[in-house]
Length: 187
Image 1: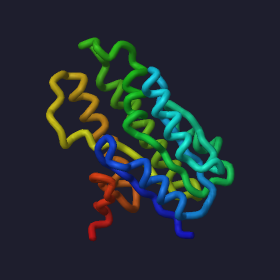
Image 2: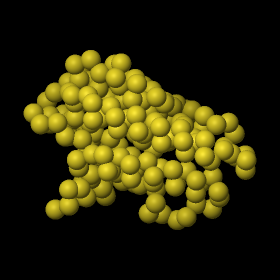
Image 3: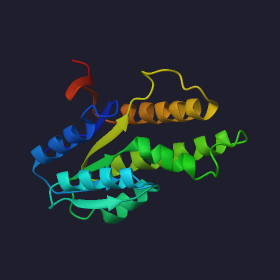
Image 4: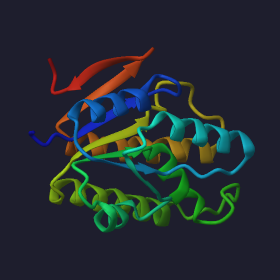
């Protein structure tokens, strides 16, 4: 089957993860599911467990908060499809590595450099590994402008990350109300 790399972008609850899993399942090949979520509280733990229950038992799961590319390289095994769910949380994980993010003195260039390096490495892995990649991310630029500096910084960093990934993949879908709208290639 032809290798294809896909970015699925949309708002919270738009059906991104479900669509990613449908695409992977239809390929009928071994799947490595890369989960970037951290169970920081009980509600998030329950969300993670619900996502786990919905995945086929035959899929291998890799839970990783950062250094996603190196972990995929190490754990790919025989997988021919890799789902990364999700970039939004990966960006948050990197953002959070730099101490108290309420601090007005947050080192923006350091965060941006670290995030760019993380995504550059992921793109290299996408181009080097003999597998199709399905990457899930949120679109956070369609809503209100965040009221604080850190919210705007996070939105801007995720937007940059999404642009980098959209350029690197073959197809991009925007999810709206559970419906995938093809964005790239343009139809």
